[in-house]
Length: 240
Image 1 (cartoon, rainbow, N blue to C red):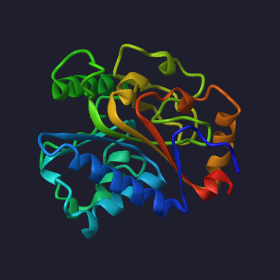
Image 2 (image 1 turned 90 degrees about the vertical axis):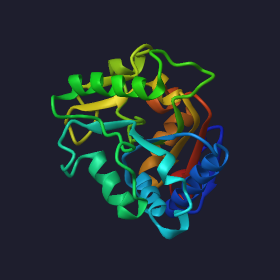
Image 3 (image 1 turned 45 degrees about the horizontal axis):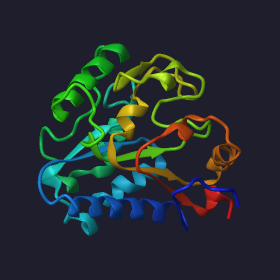
């Protein structure tokens, strides 16, 4: 078994990880009975399982009219493109979620990644109601992250300048660190850490290598995630 990060909860498989994350969101909603609830979405196969679960009857009791959906990153492609996290999330959440207009907040990619980063940061600040993040008042209620096979989270890849950003909330990523090699837009570590809860969803044998490298102390992007972090990991990833 690979040594796992502090705060890890181990599950049987990817479906169990997704269900646990859905239950975690339900609990967060119950603990905030009034006002808006902001969720930052991730791309990837395990998050997709989560979104599909949320659209099912089991989670019809979620306060959909109060939930706002944002994105931790996306590829600089049209929202209808197969590579778009927006498309994936819309398809997985489906009509059962009945997300009200104005509560689904995709990254606006029409004018390229640099313009998109500026516009999305402005949108986040408008939603938050301030120009700087207050540690006592998180931007998000829940941030969902996956773990790339190279150790990246969101679109924060090893060795890239975006890892060192401490002021901006959103950055353009002109060169992706792995396939597909298209430009991206990503939230920064300070924005991702501004949350009541951060979940890293990790499943499948392809994630054994980055987990092992993290356990060995390698400075991968995932090691830099801060905030109230929990890791939901399945047995295949943990090599159990």
